[in-house]
Amino acid sequence: MYIESADAAYYRVPLPAPVSDATHGAMTDFELVVCRLRDDKGLEGLGYTYTVGRGGTAVHAMVRDDLAPALLGSDCSDIEAVWEAMQHRLHWVGRGGAASFAIAAVDVALWDLAARRAEQPLWRFLGGKDPRVDVYAGGIDLDLPLEELLEQARQTLDAGFRAIKMKVGRERLAEDVERIRAMRELLGEGFPLMVDANMAWELDEAIRRSQAFAEFDLVWLEEPLDPGDFEGHAELVCEDGPAIATGENLHSVEEFSRLLGFGAADYPQPDLATMGGVTAWRQVQRMAYDYKRPVTTHGVHDLHVHLLAASPNASYLEWHGFGLERFLLDGPLTIEDGQAVAPERPGHGVRLDWAKLEALGA
Ligand SMILES: [Mg+2]
Image (cartoon, rainbow, N blue to C red; front, side):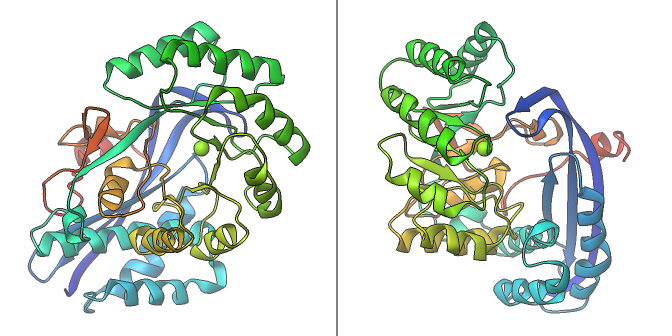
């Protein structure tokens, strides 16, 4: 698998509608960084990562100037070895952070290319037997008035979802409780409902809220604390409240190793696009398996669906609300009976509408 050309591109993409959570405030767009590799057979691999609106030009520069040129003319069949070499190449400014986003874009392109060469969808190339995975819709809805929150949930149900996540972290605990109660009443007993605090609280407040949420039979409470507070998360795991999910703000395998070592997450949530790609995500998945934990995901559901379909300890796939499907030539991922179905197309099967992206400008 010799790489003959390697290109990087950067796009600023408007969100379908402004969204908000407890930490990031109102968001109106995201950055998309793309890596395209072409091999000696003329096949192409596509990789991409994203930001929440800042830092993307640095990620783009790392792919364009540091990572992609180093692949040219070299045999990249051993993707794990290439991944190690990329880590080494960027270690002085890396070991996580923006470097992990850049490595992810290249690593995804390599896995896509390898699966395309094998003429297999990525999920089967990785050893999966069944393309279907449980999926939930991740609402970014903290500022929505209650009635709009419920209306969004009704639309989500109409779209075929059978699990939903909502934001928490309103100023007063009573508001969070009122909104969760209304959602629970709408969705019914036993319907999988998660809540996401986006790092809103200190430990004392997190314990208080988690105890108040205990009556609602939540699948998990996500990111209650600063992502590096592993001790605090471990304490919450031991409380009687909901199970704890976290990981979207961890950007290296090492951080997940510490998270799991601390017993700080019931549901680790690696995002392959922000923590080193398919290679890194699978390292965390195997680690979680060893700790007898399920693995779930954050963001880029068109990619993660393949990885969960090939994981024995798969939990839910997050259907992320950034709306990248507007730029996909093959349309959104299929949802059937509350499950996402990974495509049969070779590789990850994502084909971007370049003309539509170019029309956005940078
Ligand atoms: Mg989250």
